[in-house]
Amino acid sequence: MKRFIVVLAVLVLCSSRAWAQPAAVTRMAQAPRDSRQTFATLKQYFSNPTSSMFRLVSADPRMGTIVARRDNIDSGTWNEWAYCKLSPMHLLDTLQDGTATVNVKVEPSGNASYVTVNADFEGTYGLADSSDTTQCISNGVLEKNILAAIGAQQSASQ
Image 1 (spheres, rainbow, N blue to C red):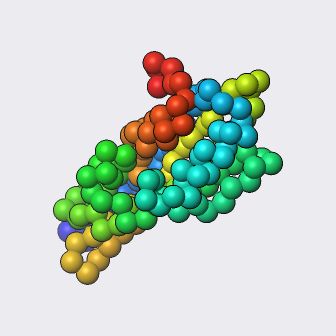
Image 2 (cartoon, rainbow, N blue to C red):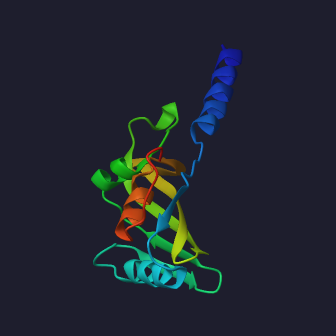
Image 3 (tube, rainbow, N blue to C red):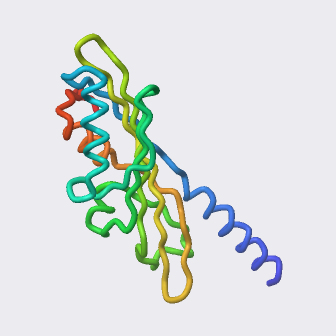
């Protein structure tokens, strides 16, 4: 009986590590404005918490990179944006907090610009007094929404 419990515990621990597989979905698109204008538009978008609900973490115009973060994401939005594979031990847990960190890269392309967007999702799930934070998998919706906000043309395969 002791051996069975030890084997069961090892299986549960190993399976919980296999379940939490972070995955970032990178989306690329061409924006109709030059890289400076596109960068400025994205920076303004992430700087306005009323419109995007994000907080600008960093913006480097020389490198063309922007990092923004959003905390306390409601469960409806979270379910649209991300999926968390929970271990069997946490299947009854509910979302307590969701965080998305968005990384954007703007590169020049003549009179247009190429924009790359990916988002990392981290969900905190819990039941009663216990909670567990896990990396989650993007559904690609947030990335598409950001590209649409700047008028970027996405390919049909994305």
